[in-house]
Amino acid sequence: MRDYTEEQLERYSRHILLNDVGVEGQERLLDGKVLIIGAGGLGSPAALYLAAAGVGTIGIVDGDRVDISNLQRQIAHFTKDVGVWKADSAAEKMRAINPDVNVIPYNKYLFASNIKEIIGKYDFVIDGTDNFAAKFLINDACILGNIPFSHGGILRFDGQTFTINPNESACLRCLFDKPPPPNLVPTCSEAGVLGAIAGMLGTIQAAEALKFLTGAGELLNNKLLTFNALDMQFRTITVNKNENCPICGHNPTITELVDAEQAVCDLK
Amino acid sequence: MTVETLDITKDHCPMTFVKAKLALAKISSGDVLEVTLSGGEPLENVPKSAQEEGHKIISIEESGDNYLIKIAKK
Ligand SMILES: [Zn+2]
Image 1: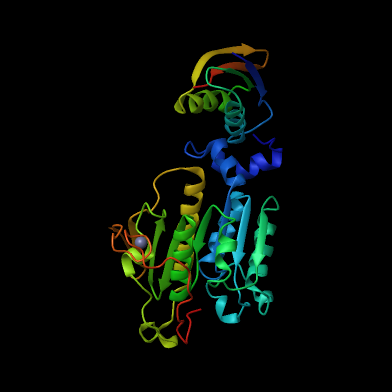
Image 2: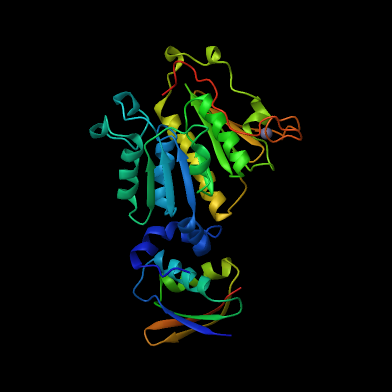
């Protein structure tokens, strides 16, 4: 067990006080390694909460730079950061919150060619990406690499998330088989999103990561959580592993990673 | 069985119980933690919280201006 300084004890006191976390859970957080893919609407709150919690190593991946249109919901980025790499910008805030944390920014996008090597270093992955090609790539890489992850998506007033325990619980392809064709993906004019729902969804994903690391409670395995902020209704739909799933079913047809075609207008 | 000691007379809620939890986490089941704490809030809350988490309070006695509490780890 670590020797906690007075400052560390104070910092983590509200977690240590929880019976389901305690000192042992805080130790697991400090030893934990989480990769956040996407430093945008979902990745920002997830990154800040995981850093605040003292998750020992946090990787954050994004190949884009901060744009002023991001600031309405991507809360790790400030007006002064416009033009800065998003992963660097988020890393700066994470270190400012908690200097204990080893933050590793990756200023690049993940593809079939480089995802395996990066996610293999982590215990848990948070999918905070904004396009179907990336979401299916992350799903496939995590299933093949046996790394648990949280899926998340938001659009307009809606959010959805579930947590995948590879080969044990339903994966993204168990539910959706393959990415929708690019022409069915919402276009730019349909790409509005209520800023705060990014925080709602990304924070649920952060809570799942913290629960995974500490072992507290039950994860959203086989449970698709959806909400609509207009009527503020939350629903949990039970989903099942599909034995015909092309990646985690009995006879998988996907045995290696490929990049899916991406929509022309990616939702940012 | 080992006996560890902890002085939280200078701490305030909730750090009193945070420090007690840390000390309890470091010892083995059945080991005893002797906690010195002040009367009032710490005396009311620390033994109660320890009990709620399943530990056993062996004794509570006055010790000068403070109190000495013996807790057996669950
Ligand atoms: Zn599947």
